Image (cartoon, rainbow, N blue to C red; front, top):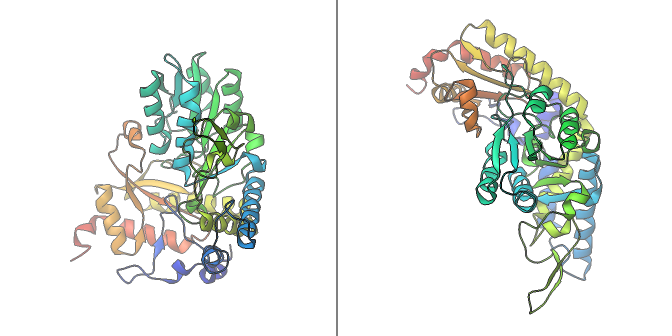
Length: 407
């Protein structure tokens, strides 16, 4: 990886922590830094292209319509989908809620089953809890293996004729295991169920081909892949999008409505994009995808996996850390400093300029599997360096000194 280039491209990499140390950013599973190209794309909306989309018969509006269409094509090519299967949302949470309430609520009844795992993020749990409450459907959990991995065998043992929805993360945000989506999809579809995939932790880090995976819905966020906050994507097979009710209604998503209450919605994806869209976010997402593809998704995956192996090895050498996901594929290391509560450990790391996540990482059910109330999570991206890992490891060696962090 060309780290000199990244130092030039990312303004956040040029700064220091509030304590004056060089900033070591190891919370990329939460959000990522933005390169100048993305910042310029966002700025360009406000300085050059400000207008609405699908709202005017003038040049600026036409230009914005064309730019949104170009961005949709960029996203579609990025995940190997058709343009009409790409819905712009406010983020992965919004995308998953659209599936739950737009599709799930209208296709699930009392006695049906929704399958999840204990490792799911709140965004892929709470909407289904609500759908279950509103319909009488039952939530069930596919068991994880002893490491915390979702296996084909465990799905096969759990799925039944009553299963209507299977909703799982492509990469779990705490343990970082990569689910075998293509193999799981085959089992789901043989049972007549619909397969929903949370791609928040996979789309930024690896090549995605939704057609090859054969998932029915796939959701991800822009801000986790160097794009702006407030922009996300829902992919859906077009036949299923036609069966999905709009989660929000308003201007721009209907063909007509009258005084009697008769409404005709536009065809997907526009029927799901009510109101003024996050146009600057859409332009920024397109720029982010272009930046990632210039680096190469395979190169990003390889770099992160090398860092993951190095970090696990070096942390274990200290004798001071317990690592909970040593064998997972993603650039996520979940650990605790022995004898130190996770939030105290994160505070100590922060005193050294190291930003890590601590807590249960919005996966509150997983505490039953881990038997830990909280953990520390270090997560990497293509601009993460071995020097960043070394800084983390050196801090862990001194982890029990956290009480003196601010003395």
